[in-house]
Length: 382
Image 1 (cartoon, rainbow, N blue to C red):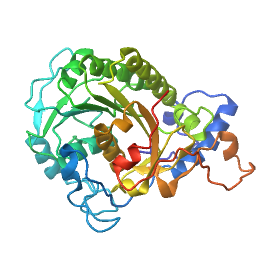
Image 2: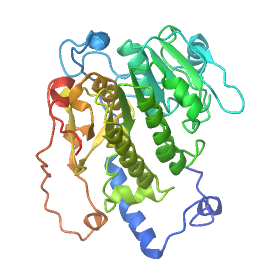
Image 3: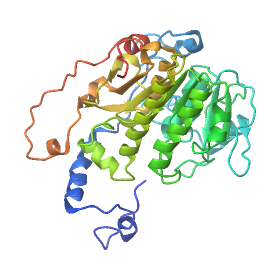
Image 4: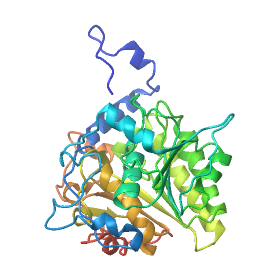
């Protein structure tokens, strides 16, 4: 997504005009923090899953004989270690076959569909949201309602999903900032996944990651949706972390994500109904490609460690955690175990900073052979 380089000036005027204004030390922090991104994006391999509740059993049917067997990311099956998109014609056909819903003025509203007890995904046009839709509707074979803020994604391509069966997938445009359409979308849902986030085409961080989350959370509580799964970000609670400072430079997105998390949790606490709950998933550096599965994923709590993780694994976690009480009312980080590392501050990223070389052990690492065994180790939020 980089802009073409400008050969005559150190910084293109078009780019510099969009950059936030920082004090000199602010720019230094950004340059230092940029190094943190080097370990935050890499493709994964194939993924495993495990026998779960009846609604998810089919997601495990292909697991057979090793860490690279079974279904992988639905967007990478043709080449397990690369992210593969269908050609434009195939994707257009898939979208045409899906159940579509028209938006009405002035704000998009949800039309009736025939889905029974679906998972509703907000932010379905984004990379992670689209993976959640595919995992839920195809792998887990759970009816899924995909809510898009636009028919075109941030790359200017028409959004399409792998599922073409209208009895399993309904698609419509809708905004997380419109309480009426949100309330209609979550009606009758077994769970809601909030994967929406600010982008250059979808509003600012305050609007989407903060206000939008609270609107969706209120709708879920009012409709007594059993579980709201929020896709947040690793390092979101550590303002001194290099990654936090780098990402927060653009629209204060980390600040608004954390503020949204905190106020959403207070809403559920004030509600006091144990039948409805939330789960906050904080991924590390996101990559494309096939997932690794539970044997190769580590969860943690306290925001002290980070690592890399594919969007496919994040999608599996979001869908799988819905069925397990151990994940209710819990906030956790997720990353591949072999990429785990300490979450470093800006000072620790300096070239002359002393490195102890030790991998931080928090004592709250959650590892296991299956998703249930991992989720069962989580501690609920205070």
